[in-house]
Image (tube, rainbow, N blue to C red; front, top):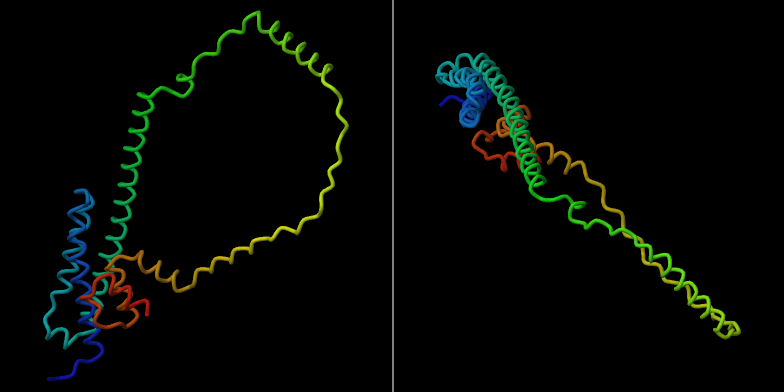
Length: 217
């Protein structure tokens, strides 16, 4: 059996990436509105066609096969990422509208805090008289109270308070955690494209978690 060249291996990897991209996009189409699904279907078919290449053609023209499959995958990946972002934004907007409607409905049913509080009673004319009477009683009590010599209290100095040690500063996030966070934000198709760009092998059948582990090394 003839040994495969580097160009042939690259072509086969490009074909696998095109197949996977078409499969993922086909699943996404089911959750998209009809208008967006209609836009994505032709790109899915292009990726499928680019992936359907005979072994003879891969052996004879590997560079051409790889170029065609890579271009179809790139077009499909870009369209998929854009439509996914639009779908997420639409979902967030719909959820915000629902929450606002619930809040409006709840505020319309429940009385406001001001409505719950009883109205203040009108001040009566007797209030000033009561205040004057209390003031007179307090004045008499002060006059009748005997004077008391002030006492001097000598306090001895106590030991200085023990200060608690300052908390240790939180460790700064490492570059590794930032890179891992960036990778986890990518889709499965984008992770496979990145693995292909880095020259990784055996990634086409890996799950997203396994791809993250592979690219993080």
